[in-house]
Length: 343
Image (tube, rainbow, N blue to C red; front, side, top):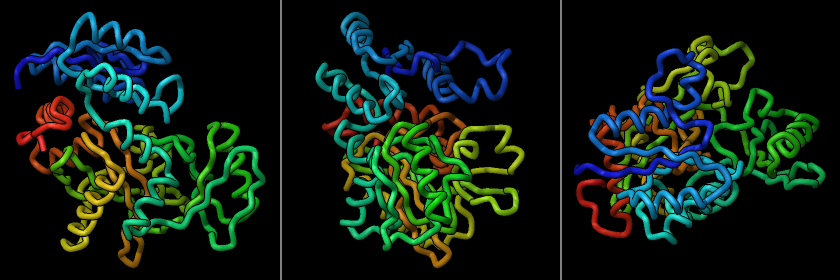
């Protein structure tokens, strides 16, 4: 790939330093994706400029018009503190006619609402857990069709934000308590969905019109405390100390029948198309004890730190980290046109 000018959009608190020296593992964990991306692309000879973005679009416009980047690589997971506003940044970049990485605005809208994406998947005959949505400022009444236990999440937040062991509820009183927690502490509507006892599996997808599906990946719960629910809590996903204590690892799904693995990869492609995703995404499943893969949610623009699930699955499939980043850049630059080398 030729030398590019790459503008990297990040949260202002996550602008990475030039070196990790002197930082704790917990501190590095906060901006590991930003650090890995910037360092790797600079090491490949690209001119990379990180830009902190919180609640103003003017700085983006100023950099695009003044510096004229070849592509904008967006690592934003929110705008103005709202996860559902990330599609507005993508829309702004489209209006400026500047190439950008990751998912298009329509795909972001369809995927961010956990109820909407499950409804669309169900329409396409993909198994999804039964669920109900609890809007803000409404009394919590569990529908009779929705059997306990349930897992309660924010309707729109991602990255396991707000998910803990208390998120799985087995009584109506606990359900009401946890929904109130989501309303008051997270500030969004809540979704309660059937708890599927089983394995936590992910399938990465890379591409626009043509897709490359990555190997089925698994989040393994090593030595959780007795009575703990085996779920991807915020600590399990983002706390290195907790991960080490509990033996939480990720890697290729083991002892998965080839036909089941192929089926899940086909399902991931169908979901990717149904939600009109492009660029790259991670599709999350829960595999029940009787071998049914239930679609949980789609994560457009997932974390792409070198050690995270998406990059690790790509490496397992023969795509080195630099090559992965350059494919993502190429997909963004060629969105809507032919991309024979990127998909």
